[in-house]
Image (cartoon, rainbow, N blue to C red; front, top):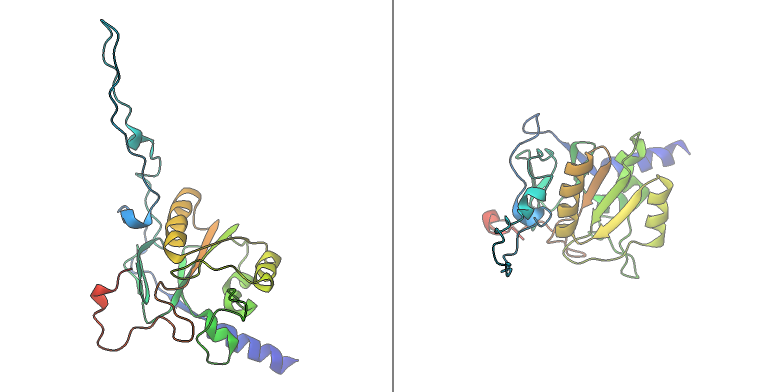
Length: 227
């Protein structure tokens, strides 16, 4: 029994690497437009006025964006890349690793390593995304846990397997699954609105391919790979 627990712990440790923040305080710079909630914008219309009626001032719908002046969390996602992510803290996660963003901390995330078979795969035989409990070992140790976990499963959305859904529910987590780009945008908005203690994200890189992963070949121009 003891050796089994030790093997499970070793598999869990292979999944994570803590990413230290490049700066301690949150940035006041706005999140990149491509990864934040679409801002409300005013649509110009022409209204016929009655004789003697003064023109009404146009409504500035942009002023209704209540998050416009709210500092973005340091773990908000600025860029989704083929093989990783760029965070608001100026930290980058590359090399094909995913990102686990929880309680204001960023972790380089390799959920496929928890399988222990060396295979670069996150899908089961039915084409469903399947993660082991060791892949979420950080959340298992955390208390209180976030209320919501947003999972980005790559460039295309795929369903979670029933076993994975049941495992995450056992941790008391509500789960929202979407493609990685939309998952990053959703995390940015909700983490800014509700705080990083309530919302977590687990993101697979945009370039992920089953059996291959998302790491770029040597010599590839990394400046050209923003998805």
